[in-house]
Length: 546
Image (cartoon, rainbow, N blue to C red; front, top):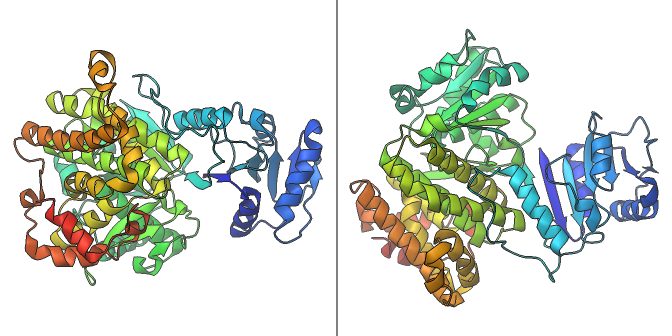
């Protein structure tokens, strides 16, 4: 797993990260020319508790349990085969050159050494391209959240899941199972995947391995379901997990992953944020929709019927080890599932960009995800077997999932979780309804951000760009929200009315509003909404979504 620590006082933050992973004897390694800066970094790092940290060139003490590399990529490459965990601390803007992939466990951009400006902007762009490679349509056309002239932003960004993507990515599964030493996997899925023939496609890639299949995961999985599957894993002596399906299957897989790795028999013991330890059981996610991005996220949402609430489990350790995005697995999705899951991904990207936890890396991933959805979602409905469109939608979902896993989300998800828990409505369908209403409610605070997103959601390239050039920021912000409403209308028409246009289409009546609003107030995502929400506010938003 790679963590990016960015901002002021990040060397002090690294100190606490080292405590969390149990490092007792860290050492700092540097190039000859950087000794003075490395000593300064050591002082900043040790300022927390006064502990003296060895500062060395290449003669790092053999008993050191963590390497802090003070410099650039050269040091990272020199120590690539060292089994110890590593952090890279660039000592100047030039040290950012070549850092276009997560080479170490921690990448620490401390404002004491790195200034805000073009070097940092270039770093974020190249780093994002590595995290979610482009699909061939071209690069970013609009650099967002430019940092020139501003102070270095403070945020924490982490990734864990390795992604294998493409039109035949599933063919890599046998080698991946060998690498993970998985001989007796438990494969979790649902009956829809079985009936569509996707399970058989995956099984045929796995040869003669002893595979235990559980195909009874429902649309809204529960704590009891997770606990039951965990017992099956233990009773049948499995040695790895594969989750094959949409968001409910992947989230259920995360719950089982947590249980069997910790030896727990009750998932409810782990509800909350960042209390989950490192999980050792190998876990592979194979999404069959392009919407949830759950294969990349550090969160799982599991329904608790006793309290009629979806419980949130959050930790970087909860993300799968590996994800396989095979375009063929989504080629047979019905049009309304394609449209609803596509708008699910859109809600992830837009909330990642506009909610309180946003950061420059999540901004870039979210922005590009929106562009891909704009260019490929509707064409995919008219040409569902086109793997170029399917690959682009899978990439968009993955990028949006990575973005919101680090920036968090707000009102759309808070209300969507609550409607799903109370009325048992698919999560993506809820969010396509709530997204424009939530943006309108938050408009006074997020107007500049919506204006920036206008260029991502409305194609302003070529002949269409000229009449749009004279729009002011407020007009673009309103136009962005209007574009989403019109997008939903077109999707409803393209799916013969199966894409929801409002709560009435989802059979959610006013009699449910009170319980939905009260439940949403207790949802963890609500804390990241740009505008504070009260009970009456949520009722007002619900009334706008009829």
